[in-house]
Length: 355
Image (cartoon, rainbow, N blue to C red):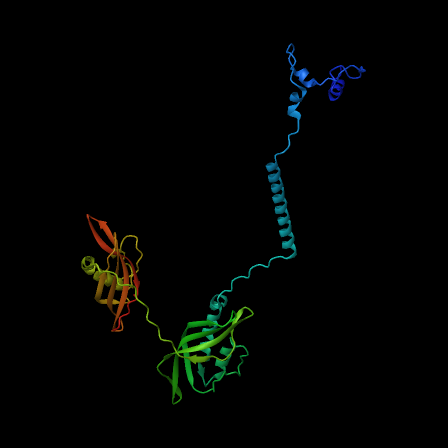
């Protein structure tokens, strides 16, 4: 019997070899599973179980009601999520969200201060320097920076007298836009008085000039006439909280500090009196110590201390001047003993002397 005939008979419910045979009226259709019959070992008695029991594994079992509900919920959730994603994509294409605006920077950052400072300083010197014997020089110098400047534009000067300006520096920059600012320049002005046919210089004085500056085509220009303004008085700086003195180290190091400051004023190389690894350069004879007016070492931890020294220096002009220094000390060990030496020295201190 061929394999094709076997499967055909099996699908018809007929036993092997029965396909194509004519069934008699008295014959009863076989209910046996041919696969079970073929799979049974030889000599094993046939199972007497009913046909329904033998085909139980092939029967369709109805899905429980709770499982059907959860299946519907799951399908509905998946469909809803897919619809949401599709809608979000369509909305993003049809109605794109504009990007958030960049935060606006303060004018002090937007205005190119470094570009404008040099122009303001140069123009201030040109504006406050004049000589009636050669008035065109002033106009030519101002025209380098002034919009509309020319040899004939004196910008308010009547063409008389003589004075010079020098040593300009920027005191304040007040931007009014990203491209415009009012810049205050401090500078030293020296007036001259005519003595016969010559000019005699008078005492110099500091003045403040406010200059309108704008940025045009990548460069700074003066846009109009400047004006003299008052010089602001420096406001006092709140000093740091006073640290606690260390009387023992102060007394122990006073003679060393006097010797160090003597060498500091006289020599350029003071490495013999400073801590190993420090980088301190002396004044090279510019000043000579008169006295150590005050010396205070403050409490600290470990092998380092901070200190403040007030020194009275003799100058080459014959006068004396008092200066204050902030000093870092470190403890150095060697030769069976230890000692405090200068690691750094910087000029200045927030405590300003009143006399």
